[in-house]
Image 1 (cartoon, one colour):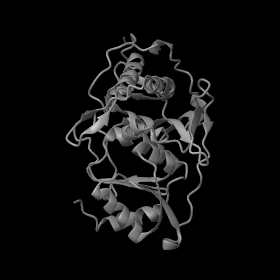
Image 2 (cartoon, rainbow, N blue to C red):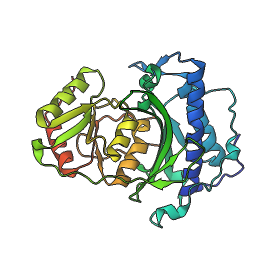
Image 3 (cartoon, rainbow, N blue to C red):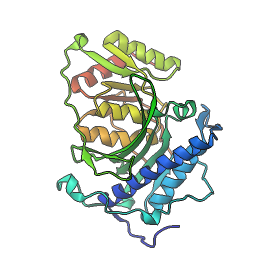
Image 4 (cartoon, rainbow, N blue to C red):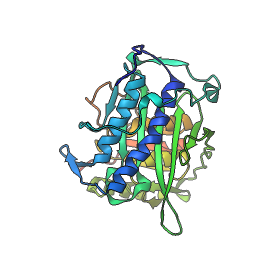
Length: 332
């Protein structure tokens, strides 16, 4: 089912309003799969990436919500399968005025043309963590690119873990931003759609070379990931943490819980990074490939592998030094 509108003009705040509705209900889709205990796993692609019923259901739900309200919008997602069942929520009920344009203080365009746009969707980033029960790493990612550039990022994050008891806590939130406005907003989702609040993004810490400790995620268990971590440890004083998944790592960069995130070549795709790319730009931080270039976002799942790796940092000098260190890195 789609709406009757075939206009190619979409207001940014209406896109955001529908997206936060989608994130709000996606948490319930995830929760219902968890409660059913149906975590049977299938695998896709040459590297046998895992996906579950929740991945397929959430992506189908995202597609149906966006296409109902914006039929001409090009939406690309990670999963190729489609859920054929029905959802409890009708996208016609999503209000398109949840986000007030005044939030952006007149600093963003009013609308965009869907002929210039593509949305990249990852229903559950860090699916392996979802399967293992480490839900604090999981995010839902909706990224809007205009003319190939990441512009709007929407990230749903549903669980956290108590640092003392290690207990998993349901604490759903949605973060969103527009790259032309230097603020990130957050809405609590535990009791419906909360009021959007500006996130206090901590300022960049000063960097004094090896006397400054840099917080970095461990990365995957592949040899290349181990080699990348070893390269960082050789060149910097690093404190390693276990954040897993591109979405949560980029969110943690913005929230000042990670200083440097480096991902190997061809390990992630555009759906992993589009939302985070926009969020990082909003925060005024740094996101490039290993050569210092920026990724473009194509209109189809062709050339969508991030074949030059990822470097995301909070500090420009750190970014430059990481890029310099990576010149000596070669994939196995």
